[in-house]
Length: 114
View 1: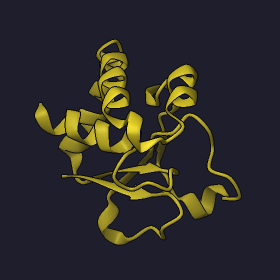
View 2 (view 1 turned 180 degrees about the horizontal axis):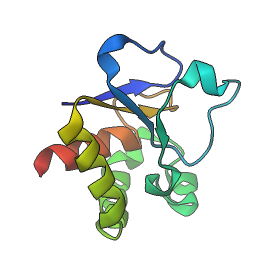
View 3 (view 1 turned 120 degrees about the horizontal axis):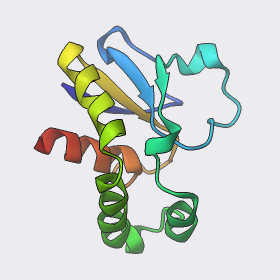
View 4 (view 1 turned 180 degrees about the vertical axis):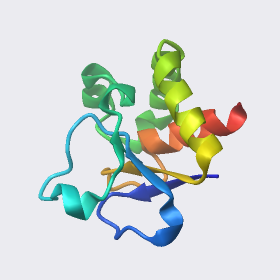
């Protein structure tokens, strides 16, 4: 099972393996508070894509397409996530304010297709 959760929400027992999927460490949070077992910053959108998107809802569809294209070039990182999922529940942790339009949502969708 793959879940998605904002890093500022408290961890819970049902989260399983928590994986931070952002390039930047979340502001104002300590490692203890974030409570992630893995930080896969290389799987996050490129700096260029992130800066272009700026969480503008009008750019969501194009961001979604471009980010999936970037992920196609990172099979080794996707493999890590698939392996973790085989071990149990995985929670992809992100910092964005928009819970419906962020890179963790795209990752979850991609992982569930396989």
